Image (tube, rainbow, N blue to C red; front, top):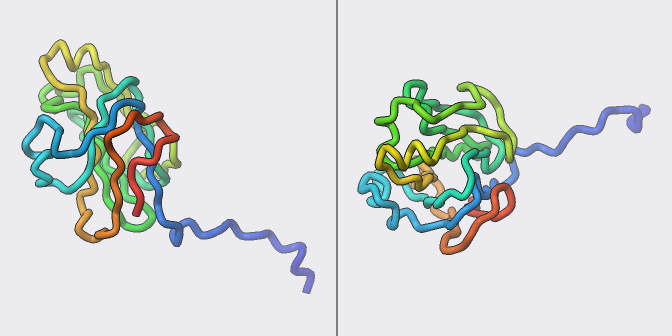
Length: 166
């Protein structure tokens, strides 16, 4: 009867096709230009890299934190509403830094929205250890998303520039 008193339900986000924005500002490069054979060969999946201008990685869209590297704090895994699993990995060989210069803002299982802080890193410490600062984005189950589009070859603005669409 008085349906206008009923609370309107929010639109169901699960049916929305995820659009991912840049998790960092910087130059976006194809994954095959990343200076790490594991990533550039697409062994972990297709993706891209960003040569960072900042030092805080944010969520590219809504999702659930599905993996953290507690010892090294250099990477974050997210599971998106469409089931896509993404890995954001800061630097090349930075696992060897054992967490020095890295800080998490999230916990495993936490739900995040686009723009939420995930990870902070010290690019000067990374360079002082002799490592590259390229931040890599990989869709680890990308074979399940043949229509996925990755956007590279541009300068991205964190939280604004679209880098991937499903």
